[in-house]
Amino acid sequence: VLAARAGEAWAQEAIFRRHAPMANGLAFRLMGRDADVDDLVQDAFVAAFARLNALDDPQAFAAWLGSIVVRTAGKMIRRRVLLERLGLRRKREPIDIDTIAARAAGPDVAAELRRTYERLEKLPAEQRIAFLLRRVEGMELEEVARATGVSLATAKRRIAAAQQAVERWADRERP
Amino acid sequence: MNRSDFKNLVPLITESRLARQYAAIRERMPAKPPRRRGWLAWGVAMASLAALAFVLYRTAGGRSAGLVDEAVIESGPAGDLAHATAVTLADGSRVELGASTRARLTSARPRAIRIDLERGSVDIEATHVEGRTFVVGAGLYEVRVVGTHFAVRRDPGDQVTVRVDRGVVEVAANGASGETRRLAAGESWSAPDGASPRAPLPATEPPSGPLAAPPTTGPNAPAGAVPPGAVPPSVLPPASPASDTPAPMGPAGSMPMATRRDEGARELFDDAQRARADGRPYDAARAFDRLRRNFPHDPRAALSAFELGRLRLDALGDPRGAEEALRDAVALGSSSPFREDAEARRVEALWRMGDAAGCASARAAYLARWPNGTYRRAVELGCGDR
Image: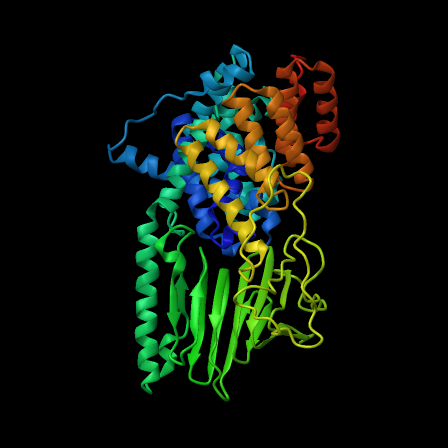
């Protein structure tokens, strides 16, 4: 990280290669679409390298990068919603989880994952991200608050709202 | 459905995808231009130097010298025209920039010149001006000049090296200790960049270590230039046993070996990166291999061994060679951030070699060291236990 701060290209690439798998995974789970991953990862790394001097503890790069991915994902989702409302983007592009989930899970789990993401798509970006960080990434509430740049109370409120929405959908679908 | 079902959701990450992502990132980075745009580096450097020379000229004419404070002097990588860039200050002192150097002219006042070296090397021929101070800052150290020819090199996070060809300089640790050391002609000194300023200054010309290379002979250090009491010339350290070819030897009296070594390693690393980006995995592997063997103490060595392992495993279909390189990556960088990655990929390499026992052993070692590691799931499924 220190060498990357000094503008050493090799160090920046080393950091990228070290953390790219984490960033790609997190980006995919937040966005639910493989097509969005590249843009999100690139945006996040560009922002991270540009602000490397602001990182107090070089050892904390991974967590710091994660928070940048999270915030960039939020912006990207909000931008996408805005474009949809303006009619500049096709609404509800299909979730493409199946092909990726099939490598790691059975078809029933893959179908359930897809349904869950389709439900989460309907949530506001901030609720969806807070929910995914808490329930999928397994972050503590304080970590969710830090990663999303909000207070603990706001993070709790967003997670609770998303949780209620998910439960409502589940109740409706229950036979 | 539980959390692990979600956690297994990872996109397919291939080498080409990573290369594509990183290429896009580099395109958008405002960092120093890549090597192939050497003309741009040269242009920027020349523009900086022209502006600097112009303002220094005005300074010499009695105008306010404050205008030039904070001017940046930069040179391109080795091989570019910018490599040989030099500037003459208003008092006649000459500053020659080594490859890939970035320095800041913090003060260019008639009675105080200060250059802060951010990276790379400067070779300075300082004139003697009564009452004027001439200081080169290199991280936590300062080199104070009396009137001399000397060189300072700084590799951020690695090493600061000072070599004196003529005259006397004083090296001082910034901070509370304020300890200083005088270096006379023919002497050189080096210390870790970023070391605590309170720590005592290292002795001149340490007898061992990769940077101990005092040039005390040759055209820049005439016979008899070493004053009484100066440390006698020492011998360059032998090449590492891991090296299959000797490290390049610089001419006597030139910048210490560390410079040559660093430039060699950097060039090999850049060559490897270019070859990989151009879709030439064999060439990339060869360059990474040479780097790790010839420069085992370079900070890029462990990463090069790791990248070599990945190339052999993913692109060259050579799991046996990959296993060797990945093992070397662990040995070269036992505390490097790539150790976990290297050990995880080694499990895969051993399995693809058909070494089930070795695979199980490597897997157990990985899981013991990183019970919650990034690759735990993949490693657990390694060795055919699906």
